[in-house]
Length: 64
Image (cartoon, rainbow, N blue to C red):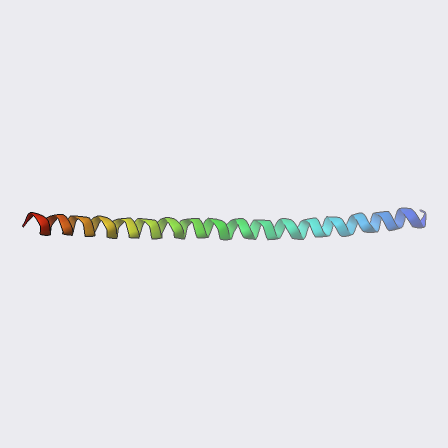
């Protein structure tokens, strides 16, 4: 094998390694994004429930 071919193969190997690392990071970010989405849905649910409770309480007080 020529030196040029060895150099190119080495660079390709390095790039493949870097691509593998990036894929791992992307998968980690996807997982974190899923967790944040779940948390956001819980927060919206709790806030919505609190808002409904406040509105019902206000209506009950106004009706009295």
